[in-house]
Length: 146
Length: 480
Image (cartoon, rainbow over all chains, first blue to last red):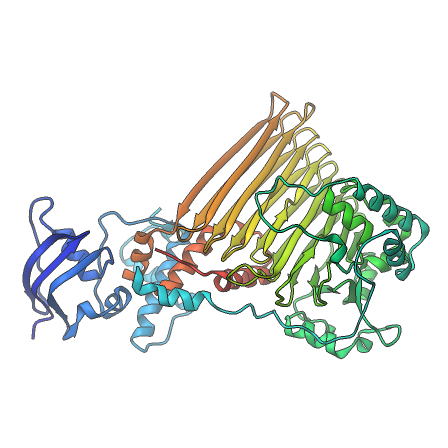
């Protein structure tokens, strides 16, 4: 069964139609890249899938792992495993990256009925992952996207 | 974001949970104000003559003054003859220890989370609790006395240490200072007093808890803290009031004296009843707070203001001695119909004096939040430095943020910096959080706490936790 199934998806922003019937099927394990000139709707498609409120879905359907994706709130979609890498990530002053990541990890763990991590366990885990990626530890104390 | 409004509403509409009334008999003077009332207050407190005279001087001066109209707040005329100026819980007999305090009163403080019974205190906080007009109990007194620290109610200090009172009372905020401070000088009923002797580092946080209970009562407390040469003290102040439809007046005065090399840290979490969503009821909080620093002394004010219908408050520092330091860290939140006009004054008189001002204003609902600050550098204050940062955060489109910075520099070698910003919680910030699985209310709380971080980290640990929770409860966001 397909993991993502987009059927005739249409969306508008401010009454202006942008997506005019997109079809795409993604099977487990596949990697798809969507290419196109500026203004052809690549960002709109990802925003609509992630559930950004400024876009209105005007038609079509999206199945995500068997669930009606368009019926879920943005945070539920995230918890189900839909992750969007932002082109222009927004700053959140005063909130450290480690605090933010812990809140995100725990929200998702909670959604899946797993126990939430305490600060110690989380730090241990994140430090391991950072060592793996050879990332500088100071990132943890920096404000989100600062 | 219409879909989210439901959640924010629930989050926001949490009740003011400190709004209960304690049924306790009160010994109150009749409504209104005249010389007889002033004398009667002084007599009830069994005060020496110099106090009675001081009060009368203040009262007579008050008659010549008019209410200030410059603050950026609106409220109906206050009838000062319609206020009860003295109300005390009626005691059955003279109290000797905590065991004799009316159990009803102790239950009230328990409900408020003030651990009056010493055995329950593990955090090492000494508490003085002021109920309506009188101080009810001061804990840990004996232990503090061993180190020479005096921490007691103001009335007790008048009886036991009149020499300190006559020397320092009014030395920072004179009786003629301003309309509300002068009124307070005439009628103040109680408050806290603290003296830390030379070179002593006060071993625990000192704390006062203020509660207005009786109806139509004004609370006029007076706090005086003196840190002698090289001493250190950290002081916490908390306040709540029952929910009532009428507005209640709170006009307090706090004076801090930091002698040579001393350090005073004063933290407030103000949570007076703010009134309901339509702006009915709530406390009018007209407070004068000021500290004086002698040579190399340091005073820090940290305040988290979430309550009161109207807040009018400018904790200030007079940097009189050379090399002295003044600091002001503030979070002021206005929601519903609340109004706040708050900020600070830093008066640089001595050489090499330094001041830091960090103000965070959050407006939601129809709240109006004003920062008003004065940085004044006098002629002889060579090399004085000031840094001011003043940030406003808006939630929704019916609230307002206003900033009135005044900077007066009369010395060419000094430097004053002012930074200001106004922002809204952005739809893109919220979406970013939600896309990482974080719920809307957690996202709003996280962003606000991040915004206030520089202030929260100045608060003592247990207060910081309380302040964060309080902001969460006090917020009704019309976010988006």
